[in-house]
Structures are given as structure tokens and as C-alpha cells.
Length: 236
Ligand SMILES: C[C@@H](N)C(=O)N[C@H](C)C(=O)O
Ligand SMILES: [Zn+2]
Image (cartoon, rainbow, N blue to C red; front, side):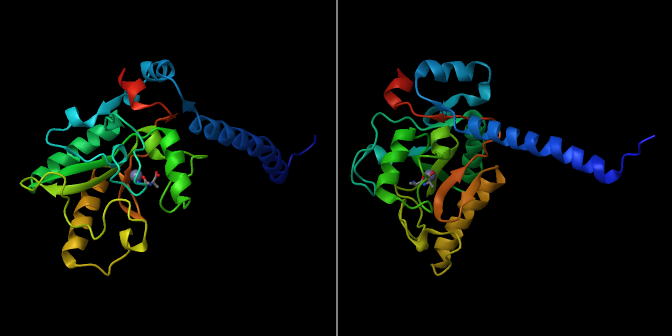
């Protein structure tokens, strides 16, 4: 009788497993790059997965403040990048942000939102200006914002003047080293403010981005597609 050695079994298993893992990774990759371009496609994708629903943060989270910069010229491009914005996040991310707001409220603070969902075409416009993957997503891969999973955010005092965030050391979209979480040559109060935002967001499941103190993302653990639909079409 022919004996099969452990080595032969291992080699055979590898011959099956390696191409299988490769094929699986290709499938996942392809899934991640799916781009939804019409409202009909969006509605179809939401149908079987309520977690994919885009939630309007301005009605879902009491007391949230909006300063949607890309809908104004008060952003680093000095151009209006989209119109009629609604701050959308997918359901699990919106639920988590609601908890962040509740936690901040207990400390006399509240959230201010600079950007949430952003169409993929806007990520292209931003990339054309910045062209630096430390500060802007490459549109070839897309951004968490295009999936409704990322949010650009700061905190303000409950009693504070509208739109005046706590001192974070730099403005939103300051693309320099000073905006990084690891940059520590800042006033003690700035470090405390950044830490409070980061700790509260991370406690509720968001991931920070070292280079931008304002950018937080919900993990893409639900096959959330990239979306390239204008606010006008989504809201219609
Ligand atoms: C452009 C900036 N506000 C931002 O959101 N950057 C991250 C990296 C992104 O584009 O996803
Ligand atoms: Zn961002």
C-alpha cells in the first residue's frame, strides 16, 4: 500500500488553499469597489440590509450642529463642492454618533459636523486639489465618506456660539503636521480637547486618522458600497 507523507498532504492542501484564498481576496476587493451611481441602485442595495440606510444626522441626533463646509466657499478649495447637503451616515455609524452626542452632552458639550456622506465625484475634486493620501482619499479606492461611514467632526460647548468649535489647534482641513494626533507641541487645553473628542469617538466604535484630528470612520464590516449620487438625487 502506498503511504502518503505529512509533507505530501501539506503540499496538496497548499495547492488547493492558496488559489482559493487568492480568489476570495479578489471577490472581497471587487465587492469593496462597487460604486452605486443611481437612486434606483441605492434603494435596491438598502432593501435587504436596513443597516445600509443613510440616516440624516440633523434630525436623528438632537442638538447636533452643522457647519457643512464643502457646501460653502469656507473650505480649503474656496469653491462650493456640492449643494443641498444632508449629513448622512449609515445606520450603525449614526447610532454610535448619537451615543457620542449623549456622552458629550453630559459634559456640557455637543458635536459640530463639517462633513459626513460625500459623493465619490467630490472625493475626486478634493483629490485634484490635495493629491496627498495623508490628507485626502484617492478616488481610485474611494473614501469612507463615499460609503457613508466617515464623519468630519469637532466639539463645541452646549452654551457656545453656533459654529465655534473648541480650540483644536488648527481649523478643519488644515493639511499640516500640526493637525496630527501625534503632534504634541500644543497648548494643554488643545491637547485636552482633541483627547476628549478622540476618546469619546473611539469609545463608541469609531476609528481615528492620525493625520487629521477631525476625521473619524466606522469600520466597513457590512459590505457598504461606495456611492456617487448627488444630494439632490438622494433627497428627491
Ligand atoms: C479631505 C478631508 N476632509 C478628509 O476627509 N480626508 C480623508 C482622508 C478622506 O478624504 O477620506
Ligand atoms: Zn474626513
